Image (cartoon, rainbow, N blue to C red; front, side, top):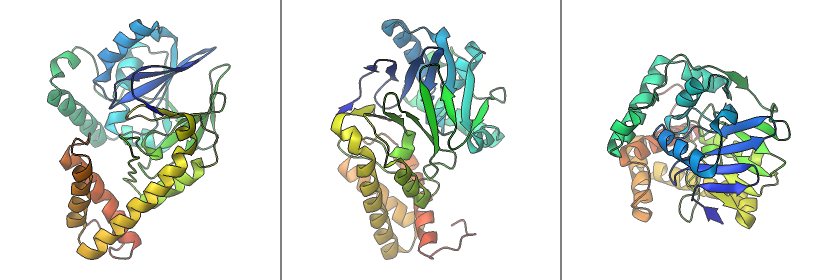
Length: 306
């Protein structure tokens, strides 16, 4: 079952935000933790939901960045500056990206662009949402744990969607927080994007296969429960393999990264005309994946940047 409405997931876990982008609040004896950072425009929505659901934001002691794409870190600066006691966690590669001036500029530009397209730029401008070089925190790696007193979060490195992707697993709740590294539960399918390295993306999915899961807590389009949650990663593995086969077929026929990327992009909109990513951004994602596919097929040398 797929649930896309904000609210209580189970005891100690909340889904907050909106359908297309959200975050999770994990509650423990010693404090609460925001799992992921969502889009920056979520901040006023989150503050309203805190009041609606009786959540005390002062209990938030930790924020976990699952990967450093702009649509997964937007609320972090506001909460870290508003509540300086909060500890922010990310992978080593994640912090590396978030210290790059050009990456910060891109994050802020994309966030502003989305808010402007949604007609809420003025509302968002009332909050200090921009990333700057004042945000720092703790580096996480494979096998490390975060303790909330009576709740433990296990960290799994899952690169491929992004080079900085990590997944969180909470054994007590059998809850998995893979962000986009686990696939996106869009409508009736699972979208599989191995942006930075599709082979690593598939390998990361395999790492998650053996976990017992009652809740798949995705960053886009809510969470998955019940029997579907238990088989979600296996389904994502199968769909990722099918998507790779399709990309390979398209590239063999076109022998051109740009042409193949556009064809793959068009095929998504043919089935899902209201897909949540704008065409230019979706095409750039497929261009990244096609470059990797072409290299893995020996069509483009590893050093090339076609």
